[in-house]
Length: 260
Image (cartoon, rainbow, N blue to C red):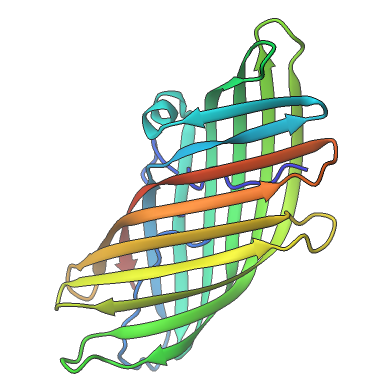
């Protein structure tokens, strides 16, 4: 069963012809001030990732290594954004990502091209375990979260001379994560975080996935914040059956958070 997060990039968090994701892609630092109601944020983002890995269908295996420039040249479409809603110390998140892309591959016997259509939806609940402003009153918080990651991926290996091969698979993984963020100045801040998932739980789960990001931010008042940093997403789903996938996505990520 193939199960990655290819796009993820496409982040989160993803790329390119899109105006906009992980795992947790650009995630936002919520205000440390108490709110009586709900605080909501929407973060469209762009993940300028490269990817490398292996895709196997039965006894046919193709390895690929594509830079961001290669993906940009072959990307058909990508779209991603992250939505978070908070009430007191409890929050909820939804992070959908969609992408279509192509990459040249080496199967050993013939030239080939891997075509991927990917849907990834991260969702779950966050809990604020630490909320203590700095001595100068700036925000400093830590969150943990538990959720799920739905992935639907269609992989096709198109050969120059051999018959083409293709497979479609869906997975639903449990994910566990944490993140820490703080404002260093009145406008500058940072965030580090990550999650793990899969654990080979159930017939549809991956062997193991992990996601990590480090982001800096620049605040434009209370209504918006620019995020920029680096993200890595790694997916391992090769149990030795008829299909298998091992892919890593890594690259800079850029997003803008709108707060409502």
